[in-house]
Amino acid sequence: MDHFDYKNGALAAEDMPISDIAEAVGTPFYCYSTATIERHYRVFAEALAGLSATICYAVKANSNIAVIKTLADLGAGADVVSSGELTRALKAGVPADKIVFSGVGKTRDELAHALQENILQINIESEPELQALNEVAGSMGVTAPVAFRINPDIDAHTHDKISTGRSEDKFGIEWTRIHDVITRASDLANIEIAGLAMHIGSQLTELEPFRQAFIRLRDVVAILRADGHNLPRLDLGGGLGIPYDAAATPSPADYGKVVTEVLGDLEAELLFEPGRLIVGNAGILVTRIVYVKEGATRRFLILDAAMNDLVRPSLYEAKHDIVPVSEPNSGANLERVDVVGPVCETGDTFATELDLPSAEAGDLLAIRSAGAYGAVMASTYNSRALIPEVMVNGNAYSIIRERIDPDTLINYENLPNWDS
Ligand code: LLP
Image (tube, rainbow, N blue to C red; front, side, top):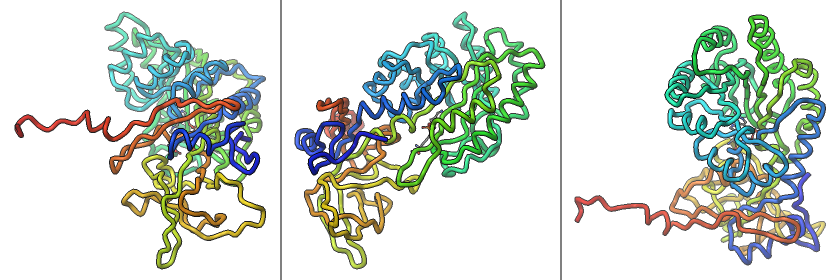
């Protein structure tokens, strides 16, 4: 459930009319709802109520410091994957002892940054990375708390580009080798074995792959514990999918039941790294129709937003709901349209052959479910701006990131000095 609804004939974020924000801020912009973020966090936390659980919000989904702070205020930790995300999480007020650092290619500088900040744990994904961390920790005179990410070789049944738990994927240490790796790790002077980690993919719409992966994790834990490794923490990653259209997705409560059934009696602290589930449906991308163009075989709504603002349809064939900001009359005429951006690629398409209430140039549209992997994946392709992010709370809004115009970016460019 989200807080983007029609009120008095116009789309509102909570109690704030979208068209008022568009008037003041200009289009396109991302709009987030505080109440929705908070609600999604609480629903997930309640689903885990019977467990010893810490929720480390996956900052990569939406890393605006205002979004992270909203969650930190509710008690969330953070899952970060770069020095930049670590800086954001700390700046937003996430306590260091609730931060985990994931990622397949952390540099020595990033590992040092994590150790310096004394974060909860570093999730190690390979033996070379383990060696590097041992050396970096040694040179700093500290011990690094480590969880080993296992690759359980389970197919998450999601889009190929966001599946991470199959043996051919670059992530984690093969589950069959984890015993050897941990045995060697216990001889390393600057490594403390804190537990295991896992993340099999994103936008999972079935619970069965989670169950299979958790069973594999449980089996690995049993073998390692029999060998004297305590493993006090198990990090189960994120990945629970959200409804992008009318399709049903598993509820957090049902996910919580699977976790409890498979891992509930393991006497371990469980970490969770949800991203999309918390923020995905808490954001929309607001855009204006620039032209309505009658093509030879299609009618095109050409928007002022493009693939550089929301790349998911181009990159993952994702389908995001698109709705008019002005509420259509019941029984309004539907027209079949392609909804496209102005970027010079056919891939810059948000929807094809969509039935939308008839619309004109100048009308506002909202592209839904843009709160996760929207702004964070934006680029300046075609020398377009990085558009503003706006956060609504009740009947107030705040610009939580200003527009960054091409002029600003061009200022960072130099003509080589051999031209002068
Ligand atoms: N933990 C780890 C280690 C991850 O790699 C990810 C996402 C998450 C947690 C959070 O997953 P979530 O709960 O959001 O599914 N750009 C893609 C999604 C990439 C996900 C990458 N890793 C998209 O727009 O669909």
